[in-house]
Amino acid sequence: EDKVVQSPLSLVVHEGDTVTLNCSYEVTNFRSLLWYKQEKKAPTFLFMLTSSGIEKKSGRLSSILDKKELFSILNITATQTGDSAVYLCAVEAGTYFGNEKLTFGTGTRLTIIP
Amino acid sequence: DVKVTQSSRYLVKRTGEKVFLECVQDMDHENMFWYRQDPGLGLRLIYFSYDVKMKEKGDIPEGYSVSREKKERFSLILESASTNQTSMYLCASSSPYRVNTEAFFGQGTRLTVV
Image: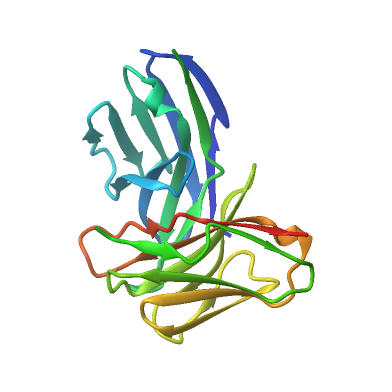
């Protein structure tokens, strides 16, 4: 059974701090790893990672994948209160185009204190 | 922009009722998914479909069925609702044939079974 584990489960930091969120996985037929941000509504897409060692950046957020050690990290620098959310990691797996499915971790709840 | 629309934001149903949750996407995506989200358990896949009239069980299909008669519409059916099916239900769609294959989510349906 495919498994995705995120840590920590929750994190409380002060505005301006840097945080690192972790995601490890065990899946068969790995295709990609995705990060989503979820506030009070549906998850919104942040990053998709398919190759090891290549950092993806978007403003203060960045993420990298290690396919040998089977994990990814999501970094947020200079955190702001608007970063408060649940961050979900998902792994896409499938043997051929059309049968991919996403397995999600339980999420990390990040709270930023002003 | 991709739009995934779920027919209801909030539903309250009685135990034993048959419940239909509807999801429509307007991006001609081949894949559609139904998840439920519960505190501490994250997003769990109920069913997915990669083509019209095709369906596959996810991780927790018991008590649910699905219907995909048209490409844009994926329905989740609770044959006889039970209180343990009280949850947030999220529909998603994706395409395996595009550059960005991440899943796009609807706004969710919060179902309460009393």
